[in-house]
Length: 378
Ligand code: SF4
Image (cartoon, rainbow, N blue to C red; front, side, top):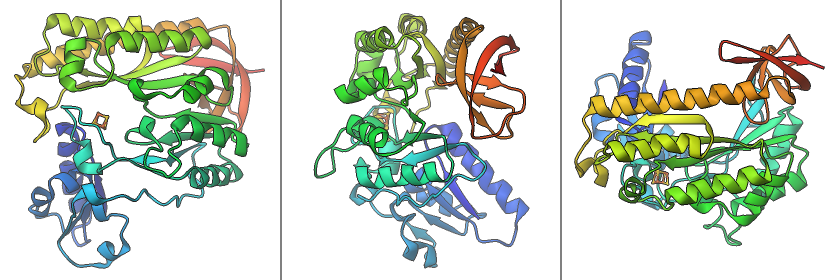
């Protein structure tokens, strides 16, 4: 059994420990190996769990010798790891949407974040390697590919020709017949000109961006050591929306960052309207060991939770209004398994009468049931 651990919040680490205990209960006699970010950052605590047989850090999870070894703990300094995952997936069975990791690691030092300690420095897959992978996924029948990375916007700086993410996206569009390309989270401080052009003008690049805003208050952003201001965020969204009005904005937001007062929290809340955020990922701040923010004055957890709730409710209202605006329009839905739902280009979840999975149907969005858009193929 392999448990791939997450370290992004304390809750994620706790969930990893629960998964380990559950797996052990289900298979008392099996070997149980823990890998991933939490194992990399804190191998001793996982090795000390009686349920765990071995710990293999992110530093060695791509190393066959580590898996063949019997050493109880194999973890090296992640800062020395420079490889990216080889592109091994020819298809994602049972899914219309495929994911391609084009970048891993991060060279930044946001004060709340433990990810660089778990993933190491930023490194990128080559353009040729990614294009080949995407072409293979298209041949396997995938209509949509999502490019992923820990710090996707920093793609390419470590490669010899230092391409930008925009160059990679342009190469995929030019050299493959992929129908729909989507990008995972982007840093608002690092969107290159070519990428902006493609996001606003290229129909095969989906009108949907997810931006790692984290906060909407300049003092909080500074204390987080983010590289953008509130005004930068608003300006970026204005540029995107003026060029491509239908573009759907998603964002990561953290509630209850240390020192955040009511006025600062209100600025983040107002960002949901100021940046027309319709897909929000809201996190309650979680003090990660050995990060600078963990040593700052903390916001009491009940207050942080209440602020997160307010952000979620505001984002849900905005999402609802956005769905409502689409009623009566016609759009292209990529049908997902089992064939009764799919997503629009802006990533609205749409329920459909049964259609063949993997096809793109033109559908009229007729009404909303609950929080679901209902589409009728034309
Ligand atoms: S850019 Fe993202 S991954 Fe890197 S330190 Fe900041 S929050 Fe963490």
